[in-house]
Image (cartoon, rainbow, N blue to C red):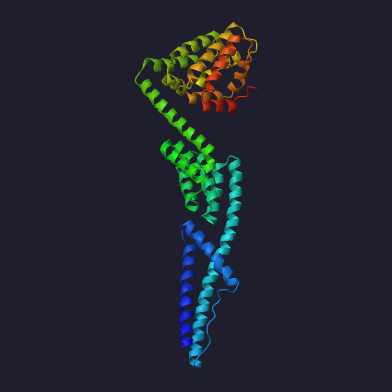
Length: 382
């Protein structure tokens, strides 16, 4: 009687072990990274327990007769063989995973090297090869997303971020790059949602969150301004058409300094509000004027003649007109490489009027946080 009870207990334990190991194998084969990760962890725990001898089956060998003993021994051998095969499979999978993890990390390193060299296509290839070795490595997805961003493959970047979040739903880098990709696609609401999730995960990212949200606001405002400016130009509004024609005239090379100074004065009078400021920007006003060799030469002269003083004053007043309250124009002006050199020189000019207008331009930047940040990043005024 006792022997039968022991056999029943052993059978039930065997069946539980079968179910457990079957579930582990299914988990290891799962396409869901989270399920696979849990299965690996559970497998390692089970193998550790087995190695310590804590889960070995101990069958009651008490027998009533020799025939029952033989049958019982055969059943025990079959059970033990089956269990050993399942556990060996789980152990082999764990070893392969560790090996694949090492290979994936090596490929990640090669991808990072290619990325740093600007070879983004090769970087993507290496990250992809790494994911073939270990498909639940979140950093490979976020790194590949960055490479896609560099190639302006924004939808692919978003897809990689989504996969990274399947591996780790609290992956801040995934939300950050996703926000950048949505912004590039002009999907401003989705961009904001991504950045909001980033902040919810880590409140210490508030400064980064604020910068990201400001960037979204600036891009959205810029897009609306340019849409309105285009509508006015297409409608044939006098100011819009005149702006384009005047910039075309100022684009003529090798004219007299006073030709450019006079044209800039007339151009300044056309700029009344944000629409004209935007038209100036969308018609390449910054590059037409700032890249002009005659204008650049006139600004760079330390001791200016009358014409060069007039050119400098007219240009400073134009810059004020196009940048007043327009953060995108402020950014474009200060990020122009020549302005980094020109503005400090104008500030230190011996001509009081030039100093005055230079300070007036800087005061426009000091009125907003974004403007002040631009000055800090792009100007050395010490």
